[in-house]
Length: 152
Image 1 (tube, rainbow, N blue to C red):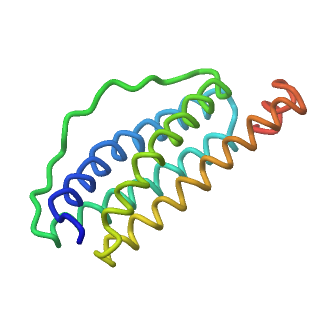
Image 2 (cartoon, rainbow, N blue to C red):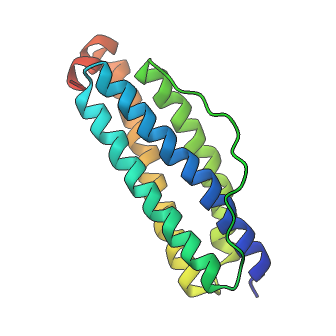
């Protein structure tokens, strides 16, 4: 049987952390746009929008479960001017997050509504992780300068 309190606590972690991650992606998009990397800027704007959608879904679910919605403290997060270094950082954030999220998905297995939200979020994050891995492999294959040209 799933533990409702643990599920609410996990959803709250997502609301707080993902709101910050969305803000980070939005700011990174602005940095990349200022450098002329419009494709990269558009990609991170889209990530920010998707993440905000999951924040809303998780916040709604907390309320549905009778929890108290909070905007928790956020820790400092770095911003990067080098897109490749940012992708490496973002990839690690994804890997760490997916490891944690897998446990929450399992905890919610008997709460079908929450399970579906978390499962969809997991799949989206996993796809983002694979995309970042693929882009970093592409950098190795075609070189940093050629990859940057493709981002304009």
